[in-house]
Amino acid sequence: MLDHHRPSPQTRPVLPEAGGDIHPRCREMAEAMRDLHAAGGGVRFADLIQADFTSAEIVEFKDHAARLARELSMRQVSARPDLMADIIDKARQAMSNRLPLPRDTRETQALIVSWGRYCAARDALVRDPWSGQRERCLALLTRYLNQLPIWQANRETVIRAVDQTLAKVAQ
Image 1 (cartoon, rainbow, N blue to C red):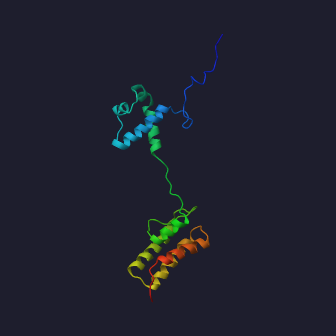
Image 2: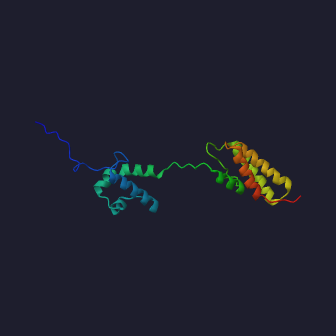
Image 3: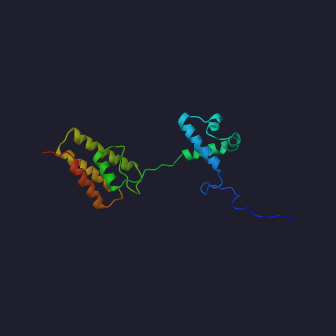
């Protein structure tokens, strides 16, 4: 007769829930490989031995741990959308490589050109302040903000905030 019994919970290996079928020592080796790579640029067998891995663990897990270390090292990073305070700050600073992009806005050529025109006008106002240039800055900022999916009240808030920081020009 065959003896079919389930192993007791005490004899089952405890594996982490996150990570599926990745052995805990493989995950540890991947983290060690990332640290070693960041510290010295390479990962040698002796380095892993020094990191308290056995020869058997290194032979068994080195390829999978190396793949896992590469995957963990590459992250998809995306900038968060600009909030109203961010939009105001960026409009006040007027740097051509930092255009304000609120939620649901993709960077397009039209937006880049429009923002660049505003930044150039702000730079011109700083170099040669006169009332016509000040009004041109506000008009170009309004044109840029009109292309963004934000409420009119928010556009006016940005315009007022920037207007307060622009150089006051006497006629």
